[in-house]
Image (spheres, rainbow, N blue to C red):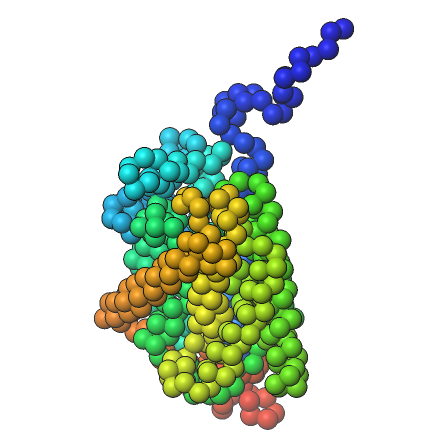
Length: 485
């Protein structure tokens, strides 16, 4: 029997083995992208749903978890109806894409492409072609959707335990439309910051800086928690907080590893750097707690883990491993200082009640990571990912110093836009429904807001009524539900 031709591919790797396998489809890339999207989705649901529901006071467990769950679901519908194309579609303005649905079969099963990402030299000649991954548009839409969703979930952490749920229901689609899509198109979809060469590998600016600034701004407009809650707000289940944090950490492999839009060498680099930086940051935060407060804090370790993950995000596939360690040291110390020292000294941090310190863990860490990426971005790694050729960080000399300036300008745009847009959104909503819960709801918590409780135990926030009939021998009503007197 004659040997098969040398160049014949196994059937599993051939195109057109069925109508569902076109010649442009790379099964490995498609598989990794859908797995990455699922990992990022798991970070929100159930990751942050669990983390939020367990890190807050018992009486707010249901409300906090539900705010995250609601945002995740609402974003999906808004995303496919109009927001995806505003973020990754054809250019409408230098910072905004044209709105439109991403629901039709003809659009979703064709090869993915980001039409505004074509990059030209100053003389008009082509420098970098349009981003066209080897999988269908449906994969791209869903991958980008879970990034948009987690941005709102992160933002929710700033306004837990007092924001009117009806106001939150209005806030989610408005902020997605008028804030998130701006940053996403400007930095990722082919907008002016993308074309200028601002580096944001996987969302240090688009997701973390924007949600941190917007969350702090929303917290200002919503107002603080009750005085009692601000004074004492212990986690109701530290072990479940660790479970949510674990899902967040492991899910970050998809968060950063999926952004090359391919299962390639750069995605591997990004995943490794992500874990290096997160581990370093957690250790540094814990060491600082031990040195200055004499006790290692589990919640502190979780905060350090998060700041490390956030800090590496804008440069995950652009920096070397040693730089990831340096970034981890700084992400474990700088946000620690702003939270534990400046947060107790500067009046704005005392006035604005940022429930889970999202400003420190996401805005400060995201900004820090963006600037450090401009410093440490390695030329060869930058070539693997960025549209602007010859990009590099400041430590590599030459034009690298300009990159730091670009990173600062990009950050200022995201900060400024989110302060203004979030303020306008909150003011508009406040004319329709109150942004803050009533005092009675703030006193009682979940049972007053949702008629549900996380634990079938009498405790914080509940009231018992006295009845002349149907009472126990001690005069207490035997009802198992909260009775408001």
